[in-house]
Image (cartoon, rainbow, N blue to C red; front, side, top):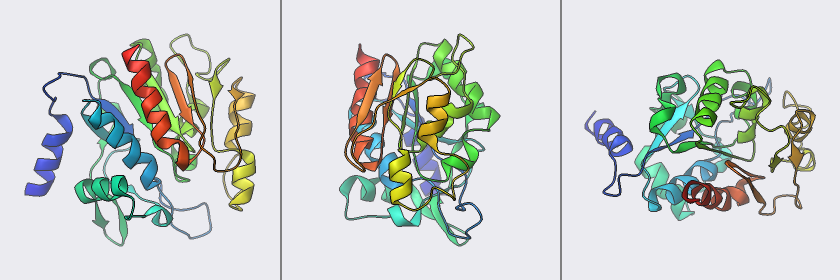
Length: 247
């Protein structure tokens, strides 16, 4: 209980700079379709942005569509990575038989007017809960209305599949974005497992999808919208997010 209290205090306390918090959103979904295999959020896609945001002086609020437990993709638990290890030491653990972040805030409890913006971490779990979650779509619209920065990496842009901006149009319409590509989905042999192909869906919504070679770093900023293609792009996407905040 003491550890949890300290963690919560660290999430919500403003640093001396007084900079507003950033919501870092993780998936609540832990099963890879009907395969029986575990999935969740991809650790480096949370840990690396978390590190960048904190170094820039912003508190980070860990959130999810429903709140509570956010499972981690077990394939992403690379604790040789220093940013991953630091994040996992502060927030990671086990609930029942699953590893992940024990406590996240429900998105519908957050006030977009008090935040600098929102960043959606990836991981295959996002493909099942981000697109249709009312809390996700409503929160994105609220952040856009406040002129906040909106970011996502890898499968995190699945949050945009059902989201509209302040103008009522699809958030990504006419915007340049980077997402986990169809070629990358084929490379990991999950094309027939995911509910839809993210690159195709966002293109159908009017996005201009910018692609790089499979698993190469690729992050794109279009105004207040920042996206990254894959795990290798998480750090750069987070730095572009901070750049967008400071412009």
